[in-house]
Amino acid sequence: MEGLFERWRSGPIEVPEPATPKFAGRAPIFGVKPWRGDDPAAPGPIEGAEVLRRLRTRRDVPGALVLMADGRLAVTGEGVVATGGQRQLFRYCRERIRRAETAAGRAWWQEVAGVVSQAAVR
View: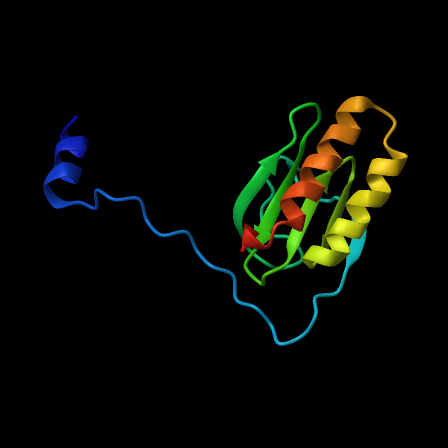
């Protein structure tokens, strides 16, 4: 309780601003490769880039859609990680929707495609 009282006295009370990505002056390169991290639902750095925030978490199997510090998006799960820009990842999602074997898998890729297609993600 003392820690809580001290925080009330000295702050900060407000929620800190979310970190914003640093964009490069070039188009991001799209890539898909095997997942080598610990937990695809809560990934750490991907390809040397810090994960700024998790945009979605997959519920049926471990996986996530994340925004990285270099401005790229990444999707983890099913033993792979796909990284790239919005358009590239959207095309990848459409292909995964077509190839989905389960309704839950199809729903996940549709949700990711919906989030990726929104310009307000950044």
